Image (cartoon, rainbow over all chains, first blue to last red; front, top):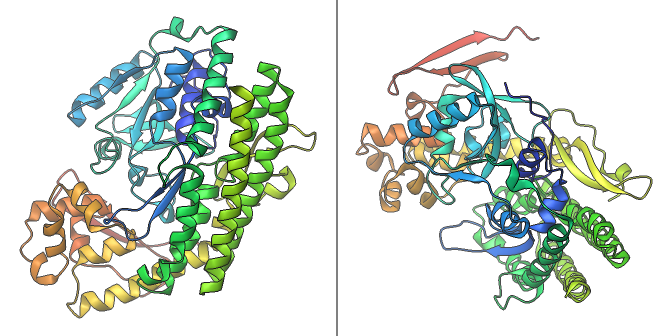
Length: 337
Length: 156
């Protein structure tokens, strides 16, 4: 097994990137990686093939890695494969050279997760750090406190699952340590670009389902959910999933807002801009109010207290967050432009 | 969020939150999952309700096992179609016992892979009549054959 420091992280993509970079000598925190990539976001997604619409509070899977490379001018070696055997042989040969490899997987096939958490999601990231025996890989999954084991059969299925965000055996690793040498100026520029992009996405994209406009669209849509739901249990489940998306699906709490606050605190020191530290406090407190929504949906979901008035209350709470975030990101944009 | 408010005592499901520490700095905190600690019972009850409803419909010949697993894992026909590698209309056809009877064995094996169960579980559900029974549907190298192990749990 490779000597690899396994650490839990809030989010699988930023956490995996953080662990790989740290392992190769570039000491960046998870919030810094998240912030530089401009990953804080809001998108409301509703398609005819969905039972309930969903929302997400981060940019598209894979974009954290892509934007981080672009802004820090660093390079990962990235590969996709057509056949599981080809992918497995490549992975094994890298492990033999003591290179930890990040892979994209369908979370459903991670044998070590509790059965109640099993759900198909093709854009989960883990790091493979060795093999225990012929058929078992050792996995550093930043959602779990310790190194886990995964059968090669499950790993093959997870790397070649089909449907949205199909991994196609995608893996990435660092093969050139020199590419990780970044100077202070590049870091400062990357932070500014990341903040600008995030603020732009949240307030200035003229598409109704993105950013603060997306929040309002989502809030309005919730009122239609009782008509879509198969029964009260299904409505309760969909409402309670709002809590999971905000707090427990790798957000670090408050829909990534707490992680973003931590990034702004760090950025304030690096850029020597005390105003960003004040902004950190503001987004931390907005995150607290997103958490109030989380606790509210969990409570009304469990009590099956899902009448029109309750859903209107929920809509109002989301509208308030959208106003707060509109002010916040406008102010943040003006600080770095 | 203040560190003190974020702490949840639930070892079984841990996660990482970013919090305001007592000294005013911001940083990570490993803690228990609030939802799992306080609402897992409700989630499991909902699943149980789906199972009960679907098993009745399965027995009455109203639905096929595809619907049972689809509802259990909260999936859509569209997603299943993409994962199995067949058309959505074919998945819809397989949702009735009549349509399911026309599915190829290889298609049913692919469904089983997507639902994370053995091929035999696409034709039967094992229901233990006693408590503390461990059921392990062990896969073999042969994708069309599994071994069902049933044993008493040694944990009281």
